[in-house]
Length: 417
Image (cartoon, rainbow, N blue to C red):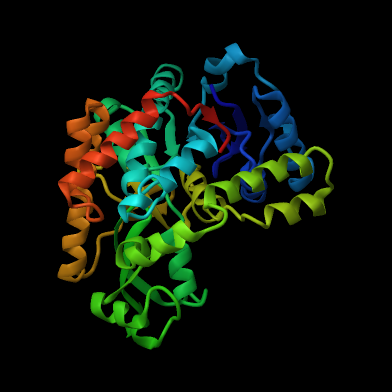
C-alpha cells in the first residue's frame, strides 16, 4: 500500500478538517505542502514509507517553515490514517516509471503517440491501475465513506468513469490545472474582464468564445508554436497542448521516436535527484530542485479545490471531472461559492468539428471502461478501434495484445509518483 500523508487544517468557519494524501511520499509532494501552508493551517503529517517520507517531510518542513507536526503510521494502520478524513487525495502511480515508459513507447511503432494518460498508453495505465485504485476506494468506502475523494492518478476521466460504475455512493472527482494555466498564458495572465467557454475531457479540451470585455481574444494574432493561428481560426477555439498529439500526430510520433531520453526517464531522474537533495539540502537547494518540475497542478488546481471544500469562495475557475453529475463523464468548468461547487454552462456551442471529435473521445472512453472491467482481448480491441488515433481494426488488435501481455507478466509494481 502507498504512503499516506495527513493534514488537519481550518475551514472558513474555524472547524477542523482532515486531508489525507495517498502516496504522499512522491517527490512533488513538498510543493503541495508548501501551497497548503500558504492557504491553510497544516498541523499534522502521517505516513508509512519511512525513508522517502522522512525526506519528503524534511523538505516540506523547510518549505513551510516548520508549521507542520509530523507523525508516522505503521504499515498496518492504513485504515486508521483514513478514518475521519474529510478529503482524500489519491495520487498513486501504479507501475512507477517503468510502467510510464511502457505506456509512452509501445504505441510508437504503430504510428500512434505514446502518453501515460492518453490514447492506447492511457488505456494501458487504466488497466494496470484500476485493480489497485479499486482496492483503495473499497478501503475509503469502509473507513471514510463521507469523505470527498480527489483523484490525480492518470487517466483521470477513464478512472472516474470506472469509479462511478462501482462506487456510485462515493463523492469522487478529478481535477486538472491545464485549462486554467492555458487560459492564463493565452491572456498573458491578465484575466480582467475575461469570459470563455470550455469543452473537454482530461488533458484534451478546447477554450473557445474567449473574450475580453466582449472583444475576441483568439483572433488577436499569431500565438507561436502549437496551436498555429490557422488551426485556431479553423476551430474557432484554442486547443490544450496535448491535442497536438491529435492535430500533429505524425510529427509527435517522429519526435517521440527520436528522443534520446524519454519523458518517463527524465521525470524518474528528477525524482531520484530529489531524494538526494531532500535529506540534506537547505531550503534554497530544495526550492532550486523543485523548480525543475513545478507541479502546477497543486497550486493551480488541487489547493483551490481543497479551499472550496473548506467553504471558501474561489475566484479561480475549477476544471473537474465528477462521478455523480448525472451526465456523461467529461471535464467541465465549475465555480465555487461558499463551498458549493457549481457547473458553469457554456454560453455558446463549439464548432461542429470540435463537437464531433469530443463525441468520438467520449465514445471511446465508454468502451474503454467496459474493456477494463471485462479484461478480455476482444473488448480492448473494440475500444481501441474507436479511438480517433487508431481507427484500424488490425492495429487495435495488436495494441490490445501489447497491453494485455505486459500486464499479465506482472512486471510493474506500485511505485512512487
